[in-house]
Length: 87
Image 1 (cartoon, helix red, strand yellow):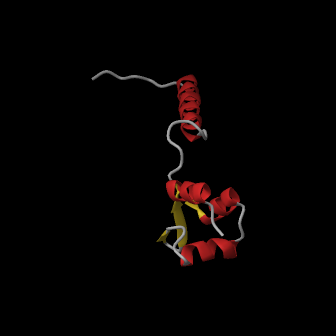
Image 2 (image 1 turned 90 degrees about the vertical axis):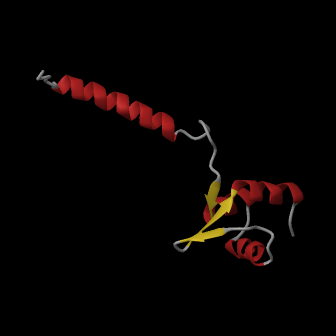
């Protein structure tokens, strides 16, 4: 059985490489864009109030999914609303 010793320097190098990879994964605009948005993100994107967002949900203009008390909206549905406009 071969024994390999890991030094503190080895761990520091590993840590920096790992952090660099995590940062690359978390950068916005890299890879896939978000497919689901939360209510506050949708309100900012559409520049609307919480009441207006609720009306869009109620009248069926904007579909959503509710998971654990949070509402999520598909980005493609939001883009359709932006393209078609709403009142």
